[in-house]
Image (cartoon, rainbow, N blue to C red; front, side, top):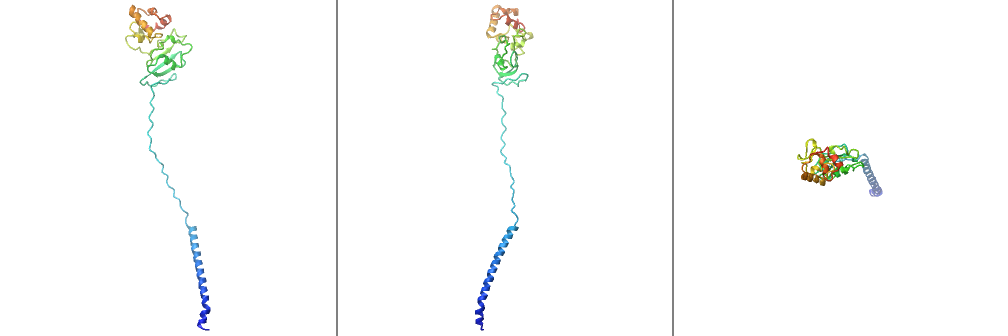
Length: 239
């Protein structure tokens, strides 16, 4: 057999063998790559999560609220037995006792009258004798108002006049805290129980017309002053 016949016989086999080897090599290479990728995924460390630090938000501090100032236009009433706060300008604090429903210390606007204080104290009881007080008299700071009742009308203490402890002014005052009938003006006379503006003016007119009072009993001669009013004034006034 010649050389030409040998190559013609075995060359196709060699080509087929080389092709088969190439296919196997490619397949092995692919399998190796896939295996490497799989191992990389399996052996790779798990992803770590980073926790972000939370920073609290700080807002601008708001200014403190302004303190409320008490209104002095109309002050409320305090229950009995409690002390009233310090008076601000434009208000008076009075002590209301006697035949009222709610005795106690009350703060009222400046210019209030005795009748306003009695209303603040819950009003008058059935036994009250309001005719013994001058309900139209203006209130003074620190004043004590005693509303007489039917049982104690004849024995009302000097504070029943609705006046404060000190006697205002010096011309109308006298020793012992009594009001002088011969020197008191109309305003001082109105502090007495049962004496209003009209009756105070009558006392002054009587004094000017008939001269100074010689005794308290002469008040009975003034028009409008009867035995009941005179009885309440005996311990509060003097000539």
